[in-house]
Amino acid sequence: MLRHRLIVIACVASLLGSASSSIAQDEALALKDLATDTDARVRVAAALALGKTKNPAGRAALESALKDGNASVRVAAAAALGTRGETSSLPALRAALQKEEVVNVRSQLDAAILRLSSKAPVRFLVSLGKLDNRSSVKDGRVINVLREETRAKAALIPGVELLAEGVDAAEVGQARKLPAFTLDGAVTHLAKGQAGGDFSYAAQVEFLIRKQPEQALKGSLAGSARALAEARSVRGPAQIDQLQRDAVSGAIESALRGATTALESAAGLGKR
Figure 1 (cartoon, rainbow, N blue to C red):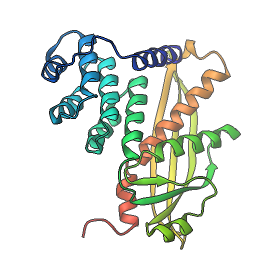
Figure 2 (tube, rainbow, N blue to C red; figure 1 turned 90 degrees about the horizontal axis):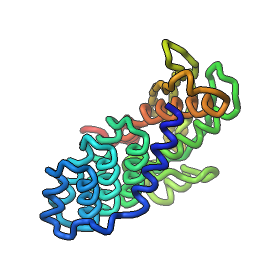
Figure 3 (cartoon, rainbow, N blue to C red; figure 1 turned 90 degrees about the vertical axis):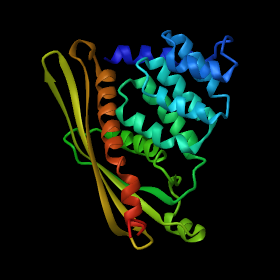
């Protein structure tokens, strides 16, 4: 529900902004608290404490806490893994992101992945190419959403450096001796629906991977998603715009889950 979404985000900002002064200092106690304490507040404090350590057991415990039944604990675990700065946590964070449904937890997982990805070796250079809206919703804002959300999510692809708009990917790739690609994208479907008490938007997107400088088509990616809200909470254009954005954003995320494998294949780095 749209109103609930905004409230949840505000709450998590407060949680991450101030760590409790009662955070456990002893690593062994923090490990125990995170694994066994029945009070979610204690587990949150333990997770944040482990984020300040380099104990290998702490990383494993935090990765396990990404599956905790309490959303606040999952947020704290993701934030702590981002603070620790270990790129070896990226697979666990990405796996958690694929299964996570709570908006504020997903936001923190995204932030942690972005922080750790910036430390990972660059394997591919990617620029955003032609964007198109081929859906029945003829609104210029759809292209803006496609551009903004694709840039945000492409920056999280393992091993990818997303180039600034206007930068020549082929030129940079040749200078840095890295495979360079252009990602052309399109919203191929965007439609509203209503069933029972729910109002929804369904979206589908498609991306074409072109290798530079030859502009050779090397692969494609497609994804789909549906954003739902209670019909009574959709009271105006702002709520409809948010549902459209959520649907397109989810479809982009769905498509880009296969980007690493597709880029490896496009660059000739697949299994031999």
